Length: 100
Image (cartoon, rainbow, N blue to C red):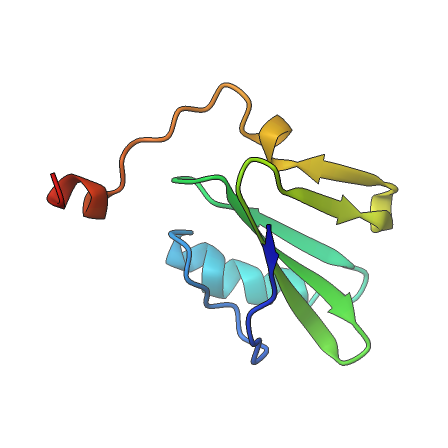
């Protein structure tokens, strides 16, 4: 599944990715003129955020679920979340534990 949320040019998202990754590192990487695509992988679920350079700046793509496939034409390949998360067991989220 892919979702493309409204993107205002910032790096904040709705994932549990560390705030340092979301702000300082993201802005630093995006300042590299040759960088075409920046992929961040969620630690607590099968999901990834992709910031891809476009003419008007960066466009955000969100991939969710083990069936998701991230196309990476910049390096002539694709990345499946199933391959990325092979042998990974996710812990229950805090919200899930509070509902038990």
